[in-house]
Length: 67
Image 1 (cartoon, helix red, strand yellow):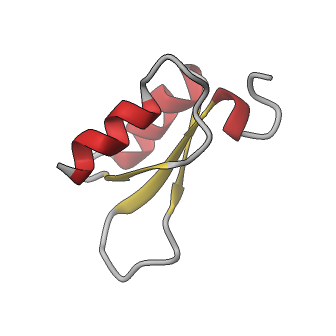
Image 2 (cartoon, one colour):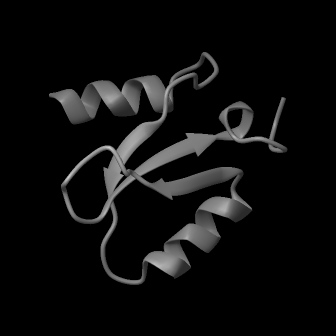
Image 3 (tube, rainbow, N blue to C red):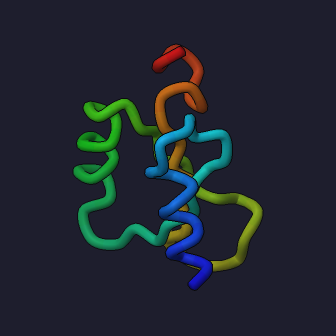
């Protein structure tokens, strides 16, 4: 349920104000390129001990992207 709540906040009608936490595995560099092309930025989440956990930020949450 927490994942659904994160998705609702990230992809809702209002602007994204909080990063979306996600686990990325596989070709992470390729996925990060796709995110960048779509105006998203993925940063390794340094505040956790979980492997492959990233914070995703869209548009206005990323310096130089969006409003």
